[in-house]
Image (cartoon, rainbow, N blue to C red; front, top):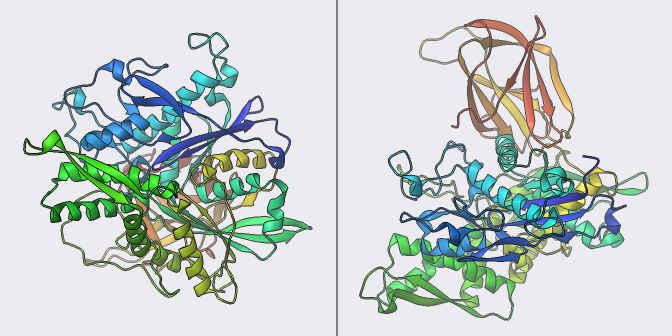
Length: 610
């Protein structure tokens, strides 16, 4: 968008969302003055204040209803829900009405991510439940957060000098700027597509996606101006360790020299790991619940939810403020026997550091692997959290993957990001473990920017880099993608035809590129319901478009199953070739191209979840 006034970076975080921006006519990244947008939001009943972060929480009205004036915003006097700080704080008291971790639900293949299922453990929804029991889909919840950011921006940045009632300048509205929206590097194609859909639902029709670890690295570049080239050198392999509220994300960035200048390439990404601050909050909540039980106070499920959310705020305060040693915790009571109707306890720094260091960052060897646990035959449904919460175990599995040339991976530097990594104790522990794994290499920490705000800043910096105003990290797709193809073989009673994995997109394919499989024909069934298995792998970086993997179980994982009916005469089978396009915004398009005429069929993701 050549007439855009600003480049905007949005970090749609699991716990907090942030907006940063820079003038679109900034000459270079080194000269960029990247600013944070102070986000207006409801912080108490009828009280609106600006904050640098918008907590990524959506509060649905309680069963008895909530007066509209209590939720009113300068741009919306009758909102249907609350987003931000008030939602987070009030949700601690009524957790059954709080939508949290909507971003993590976007990648949950076991649910219909377009269905109204959140809050997951809230009151039932449906026609008989009434408007007060309305739920949102993960896409709608993510859109609610993005919509708040867009409307807040337009209210502040696009208004004339006449004040809140003045006209808006369309040239300054967020939807008319260059917007870069970050996602976990481990998000698969479906989750990325749904993120773009949420943005469109929020009134942002054109966004470009960027992986969060790359954004953190761009923020580091912008924060050091021209001196960043002195901190890394050709041959460095930088591990970006991003531990946020809901996920842990690992990426490797290779530093090389090309034509006398430093060249950066993202060479590996980890699997999607649902382990992070949320797990830590729950760990602390159970520890405090045990202490209360020992003193004779037992919490029910409702109170445990409240304690869980309270521990989040207390943990963040303790990790952010080295001078804070303890934070009081209050849980609403359930019964007349409790004096004042509340239960009080406290969370101490010693408890936080000991439980979280030993539980999430334990010492381990390079050959350690995440441990599974004995699983119950029937489990409560919800987010697919990792069975092993030890982040260092998952890190060991990541760095133990061989590089593309077959050599072991040995990072020489680590850049930390995410609110969890504010703790110097955790950072020192990870660096110590990395050095124990590669004593001959030596691993150093390279100082990053603000752990909470770096991703949004980096996204704005990336917008400048895309315009040729700074160094750009070469990356492309963070995994290889495959479609299941039924083998051509005689029918055998009781034995379905085996499925082979056909690579339709290779690791590292850049945005805006197209690949086609024209030397091989496939048979496409049209005019009746058909299913396509969509698969992915982060470890098979050598597979090229057109590669067929016969024995793929174990190292290629199912992502989703697509069910659809393609246009055509019922039951007709047509010869086709396949074509894949990586869009400029970072999503995938797979096309079946007829060999007989000019017909083309696009395979749409997320038709049916597994």
